[in-house]
Length: 116
Image (cartoon, rainbow, N blue to C red; front, side, top):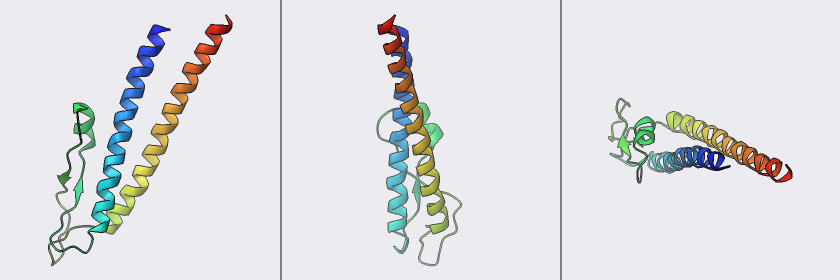
């Protein structure tokens, strides 16, 4: 039982961090879209791999390099941001499904242990 709790804590903790990062990205993408017509605004995003490795504190937004800049200095691409919204929603759905599965497995182990 102790091992199951440790495994759940580790897995749940990693999934929680991943979902926190997805939430932070969702806010950044929404901000990017809201500023699509703001002169001089530069697209922000997260470095997912680096943020998952550090697993500490609030994720750091960073400018996105290599995007074409319009005459007003803005580089937000609605196509890119729309794709990120859809990708982010799918990732969140998968992560929450994995977390539900983990919880079901633990509940099942508890019920089987109680009836034994």
